[in-house]
Image (cartoon, rainbow, N blue to C red; front, side, top):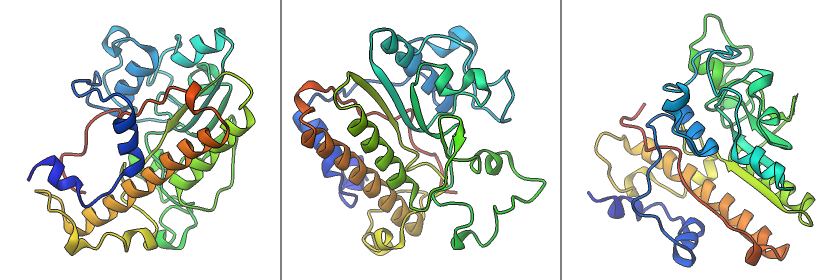
Length: 265
């Protein structure tokens, strides 16, 4: 089945509008097949191999893993007078020297790891799996249960993560609407683990989803809901730009840090 056929059961009108009303780069590629090194490449404008970044972090708080101290697009724009904000996934190191605030971001709302569970850890659906986190724990569980933070401080949250990140992005734009700003919206979705609000999953019945080889229908259903929520978030951000009168003076880029998962977990 073609990618076009597979996509018809997951509508993304807001993301589609960026392609329709803007420019599509049909032969653009990220420079690595893993999240961390790829993000290091497009945030620094350098091939990550030039500074030895070849794999994702496996140990939080290990200064030998992650992005070495260097200029990023955020730090360069800071020098040009921009207010710089980041929301969502960082995945470039967890030490203070690797923190987004140390890498050019004036304001950061998100998480330092390569992923985060999509609900607070005490959510009933987890049935105590993460609160408290049982030891010994898998490295991915350790990463995906780091706190949601605003700059250096943990924050409390109570809604689906994609919606939480969208709210943070909208808040940043409202706060800085009279300034030149750069906002890096780094959504977690549709990264594993596969989670979405039940009412959104219901919009994508498993038996109605287009079939993808190797992917279970139930997983495809949740994935569809996650992409749908992501698209809603993009729509809210674009609407906010309109309402603030900033659309005609703003460049919006949409890309993925790398391709999809090769198997269903």
